[in-house]
Image (cartoon, rainbow, N blue to C red; front, side, top):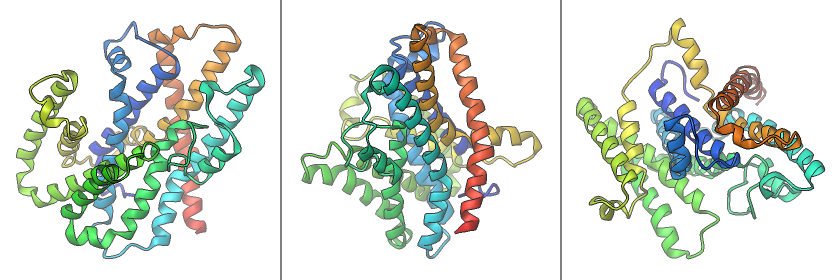
Length: 355
């Protein structure tokens, strides 16, 4: 949705990194690994599983930042065009991976008499996925290509963004902060049982955190260097506080999500750096544009490995070995690059032209 000339490439790198960290988290989760024997960094993410899970929030915050950076100069947004852009960008790969996982889990049911991980792959949940509503609070369990829940929660936020756009442009960070407070603090206070919509409320919080960061940066352009220095300190402080829960900072950060300072600092550090697109950077551009692809393809790829290894009576603990880890990653990257170049971009172009 953002042109190359406008693109904040360090933020795109950060977006790709957030997807990759989540892939690391799911790598250990679905392969059932308690430790990783050959790489300190991977082992750290395996043992500190909350890091990987929380990096989806960073993805939401960056999405909020990039959305407002693109639409801020527009007095109005045409809903049809707005909806087409979102649909053309995100839906084709979602639909493809939904069908792929449906087939893989059908094979699992045929061979083992059950779906992998006990996911609810029934027609009810298939319809929820079909309408991008797998995590709107109607679900009974995880189902099909489960990682798509992060994108499912963004759809209502996109609609809310469109409806309230004029207020957002007029009130700027005041409106974005009020939105964060309302959805993350007031709704849980008013309604006791909101477990099924917790992800939706968190998505509102982080999406509008990204918007708030953008407006604050716009208001302090002359202080760019100071902001970047402060962001480095913020990253160091947040890493310390996240690793040592019971420290002098804990009582002050317990009222806000623990990753807010880290993600705020990362975005502040990246938001003022631009890459000029040239031939030498085209490979980098092609690679970092796969953040959505690696996120949606890693689950069906893991399912394929799990079913194949179990069928052949091969122990999944082999994935603790760095060689198998590289095989998995290289396979995922190849699939993602092909998917991005040969499927997602052509589909986006066709759908935009059609509508």
